[in-house]
Structure formats: C-alpha cells, structure tokens
Length: 278
Picture 1 (cartoon, rainbow, N blue to C red):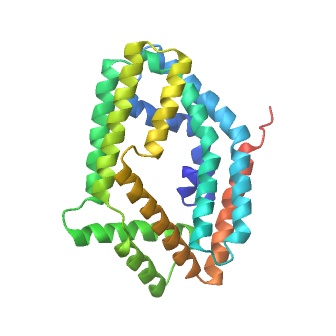
Picture 2: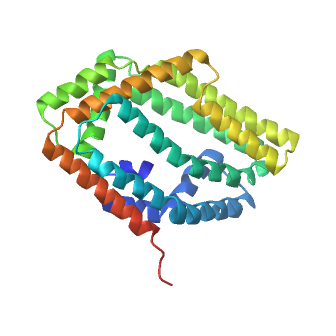
C-alpha cells in the first residue's frame, strides 16, 4: 500500500512492475547479503511478489473501490479509525508471508551483516533527526506542516487558505512526540538485532525462526513499554480525528478529486494483478 503514496497512477504501475528489484536494493541496503545468500534472497523476493501480485493486489483494489463512495461523504473520527484498522488488517497476510520467506535467510546471517544493519540503523536515525528533530521549534513545526500538506494535496488536490489553516492548527496541536518516536525506534532496532543474533546462536529451525519473527513484529506493533503504548493510542485517536476534520473541511470538488484519485489507483492495481499473456 505504500506505493499509493506516489503521485500519479503511472508511477504506481512502474514502481510495482520493478518492485522485486527495488525491494532487493532496499533489503540488501540494510543487510548486505553475501555469497550464496544473494541468489536465495532474490529468489525469495521474486516468489513473494508473484504471490502478492496475484492474491493481494485484488484485495487492495477492492478496498479502494469500497473507499470511493465513502470519500464523497462526511466522516467521523470513529469511522476513520475503523477504516485505518481495516487497512492494517489487509496488510497482515503480506507481512506474515514475508516473515516465512525471511526465515530461510536468517541462518546465513553473521557478524558482517549485524554490523551492517547496525550502521544502517544509525544512518536512518540520523536522517530521522534531520527531518523531524530540528533544533529550532519553528523549523520543526514548519517541516511537519509541509509534510501534512503534501499528503493532503496528494489525495484532494490544491487546498485553500482556510483549509491550510485547518492542517496547520491540527499539526500544531498534535501530541506527536518525535523524541519518544526516536527512543521507541531505537528500542525496536535493538530488539531486531538481539533477536537475529539469538536465532543464529541457537541455530534455530525454521518453525522457531518464524515464531520468533512473528513475536518480533508483534513487539514492533505493540510496544512492551506501557507508557509508549498509551502515547501511541492517544496519537492514533488524535490522527483519526484530525484526518476526519481535514476531510470534512474539503469541498465537493475536492472530494470528487479524491474519489478519482482512488479510482485511478484501483484501476492500476487491477491492471497489475491481471494475468500476463504468455
């Protein structure tokens, strides 16, 4: 579903058509596979995309079809949260399939990979600090408003000054805490490395690896820290209300533009999922 963040329907088709290659570059950028792990990882990614294209893209297209009439109407924060939960549930099969595929690759990882992952985490954290933790609070707020505006305009098109104020005021009032997010992010990264090292040291079998990876994902989704879980719940509720407020502030023409954008994405996903003629 991340490809839906791209601007333009043709970008979705082009990106997904090259998805296996792009996924390989991204994953190898984190792990730095070596030796015989390289062709095995590439083959696993190819198999995942073959499965995903035929089984999951039609599901995502159906979800976008369901959203099209809804986007023309006002929405409540509760309905927005239900929709968010529905989308996340649709992503679960793809995540689990990836974990099963990854389990075959974990035993081949070693110290060189751990160090590479660690360095990549540090690099990504530096990027996060640059983008979200500007020392000047005004600069930080401006960057947050800019990101929010880009997302709004990606779906609804150009917005007016009154609507920009709705977005700016909502961002300013948000409970989003980038410091807390960074701390949780670092906890998750440590958890990833500890889990992978433990599995390698134990020479765990595939079933044990899959179970450990599933538990790891659960901890990524639901933090062991009760304070962070409470914060995350507050932020989720706020974001649902904020998204509903933005949507309800749009004009009928903007809602229609959003519907057309969703329909374009639906058509792209259906075209990608269609069997190719041999």
